[in-house]
Image (cartoon, rainbow, N blue to C red):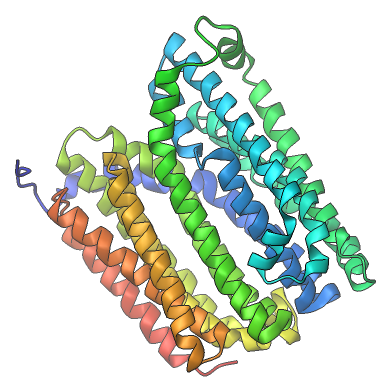
Length: 467
């Protein structure tokens, strides 16, 4: 059945009402995201200055391996847990939370076992030599602690404890900043296990803080633990798994694609170039995370609760407009200051990363937009399309990165592949939203996005050769 036509413009009198919750959400979480990003940047600066590019590349690889393991350990089910705990009530809610807790515990144990039993395979995938494989079993510890953090954070989000979540987001980066100096010094002295100890330290503090924050909501927590109902529910498990399966496949594909590309860079150009590529990637990801993290607690629930296409499109338009302008400003600033930023947040040894950053910054703007357009697909429950768009984008990333390796250096090809990845994702999501969901964003939102694209393109072109 064809969806009814909907207006493409939001009445002017409704504009303040539509934009107010978006701005409020950005204000509630944006400051915490900014502080978290600064703390992460401080930790990265210390690691880079004391340990050099090799230390940064080693830490980044260990973090990527841990993240891939966390995705497997949680079934990438944080979103499914949050939605179920928010929507359900009473006995059904308690059964759902208990069942997902069991799923998390079982899959975390399996992931830890894989890291202990097959470290050589993981080391080879990351481009490490055989000697490094003895470090990887210890990653099971921060992985399990991070899995606990993911579970507790999802429940806090479902309970609307945004303030607690904001504070919680500062714990791990603060711990990394505190422990970065001794860990980097130990690495420089030939003790690479110090970087693993740093990850364990940060994960332990953040996991404990998450549990304490959850225990602070004692009445609801006790209702989940002691309320009526089963400890295991087949229907609840099916409900959670149907959504998380697609998210799990997407998350594993993302982690696997990045590990494969970084492994190729390491194998062909060495850890120093990999560390420089990581610096460009890190600057890009940090500013994108700052924009998106300030919106994610508001956007998905708002779109999912919409009862009319016009209401849904209003949410999409307001978020698109605000995020596009915010992202364009941040990207333009980084493009103009990239040599200084690389030296300030890393060191002079990372100056060559400017050549990669000029590409990844273009991809950042496309990433912000494609994320905004993918959320309505998730809210509509079309997990097949959601997964297909993600897999196609990651496939393009790997194909372009490796395809250009014969003509360009591996790191340069990967930076261009980043742009191609999110251009593909953006196009697929836009076509689906227009043809299947009949999404019609307001002309003002489209104009804001085009303005942001023009600003990003112009500033990048003017500063293209700076290094």
